[in-house]
Image (cartoon, rainbow over all chains, first blue to last red; front, side, top):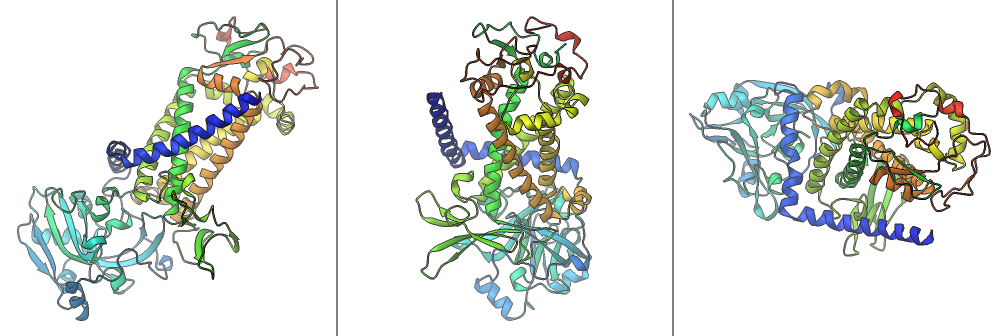
Length: 251
Length: 336
């Protein structure tokens, strides 16, 4: 019995050690990352079935708004271009829209305000786990897309940002055209009835109602319509995607 | 007729060879159940460890929809003491504990004290790596969900749920007896050991339909895309952060279940139980069920760790409450 017990104990400890080491080796391997990452496609397809593309994110009341909307990631882009724009309260700011569009454009915040706008109180869910609620004022991305005219071959909207992450890598993000045309997808210039603060992405940021925080690109400089984002960054469709996070951030 | 116990036996199985004259092997767990059980072991373990990795990205819990600073229900944090050493703390409501070494601050692979909620030996992957933790978690979430659906479908079709897990009236009446037996670490022997007692039935049903269903729903309630259709559920439990807190609590409830489950396996004949869940064959002591007192003298003490003698008469009525399975007649049945 004692032999059996010590054998069992050693077997359990040995197995646990092997499992931990094995999991870390799988995490380091290309095939392991690929196999484990296969759930992303399943999540995207099944969630699209269960929560149709037209389904709306819940909108909250004024009473639900976070007293402090926690700014995450970059809170002060250090690039000279951005610093110069900020020094002038973003009066010279223009959003560039180009790529596979019929009429490339440079749009000021006032230009954007003349297109269809929307105010929504929605919840922001960070991939880290925390949530905050804010009241966003912005222009419907679909209105901007209609304004410039989208090439029928285009599949994704890529958002290029002023802020640089580690080693000067610029932040960028992308969504597909379905998500881009969702009525809660905004280019937001206002937070809680005030101009968007610098820490939260001034002068313009993306709001996607049904995806995680890292999709909500801040400090937008340019919007590009593309057929594929393979040639941008490391080709995964976003700064964090290039670091191993899922492009589909619906969960 | 003590047929309930035999109802779990699979008739397609070849007749087992008895181990010893006093023991008989009964085909107890069918192959699909055994496969699904071990898949579940793997999926649940990896989801737990990768879940703690994800939790470590923001090691605080809240109630409601927002993560307001100062409103944490549970917080694993770190600060430096005057000497400059890292101190890990666990704050539970207004109570703060020094948990350096385990929670808040623990050693990484190189032995350096590191700020992290749960220690590296409890997370997959070991180092802080949220993106990879999420991959593990969502991959095995699908394994867990599909395996669970297969289990419920199979168990309903084979009447395993209805027959072996759903408590009978007699089970309910015997609950006091069952609690006393469990508290005394006494386990039934003979064919009665094949039949799940009321506490087992309630435990398994709770784990499957409350913990299992609940943790998946609370996981989905954290998904911003799913919340576009699940928001009534999210609001019903208090909000997305409440769902995250409940998800965390159920994960630890699973751990509590597993600890009790493994403990019961260890004290009720670990090798016999493991053989049952690996090969399907579970050894019982024939001839014990109809005797007035269970005679332990023949038993292999190594197989029945408690070696407790049930002083009371075996109450045949308590295991006769449900309708017998007419198809279960077999030579595997020691008495009929």
